[in-house]
Image (cartoon, rainbow, N blue to C red; front, top):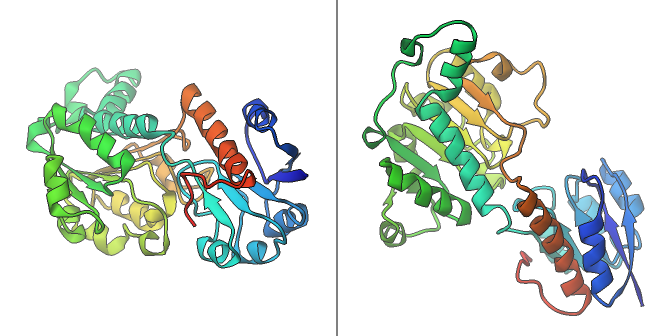
Length: 319
């Protein structure tokens, strides 16, 4: 039996890692590569697909309800906001991700953004290049042990981030409604409720998934509650922060700064006011990346498909 595997879209130079996994599986797999942008394009390509490998193309309820024989949708990455999980579950389709491929990379990137802000590295570098050799251009800088890093989320990546932050001397608190105070205490972390951590944090690092309840979790009201010196770090998903409200808060000095690896619109619009603000650091959704992580991601996403088509259950199943 020949299985048809549709790759909805991709941005890799080649697909050798996926092809190697499929070739070594022992299954007869026809690998169909597409570059779908819309629901209609996915629906057209996926009619006979036994499996779907997805990067950014929308796998909405409408798309899922049009599928006839698809057994699994595997997504490159941790987040599955491109896929309607409820619709897939109702249809009996397995949805799988790769939740553990970039733990080191994303936690390292969040740490790099934190340290760049805490020591004003980027700001001071830019001032020196303008001819301003003066430490006062970075005032104020405070000792780490006098500051609190608030972490939204307590999954794999934020826990690893916390493990790297704590030895530097920062006070650490976390918010996660699904994790007990006892469990956080065992990791040396103070559990706080959302509004409390919003008010307390000098640096607020976002690590929650993008779901209905976290869309614009950081909004105008919550930004108003933050410290004037507070900095938001986001390596999760852009829409968790109301970007318009963030730009307004930064412009008015309601908070001190932001360090973003993700934005509501990607790539970020060249007209975004955030690009004109010295107090904002932006990287191009690159926190996940290292050569090793990219290979692991692609291999595991393909292995999800092989396992399900072979009649097994992938350990990364979400439905």
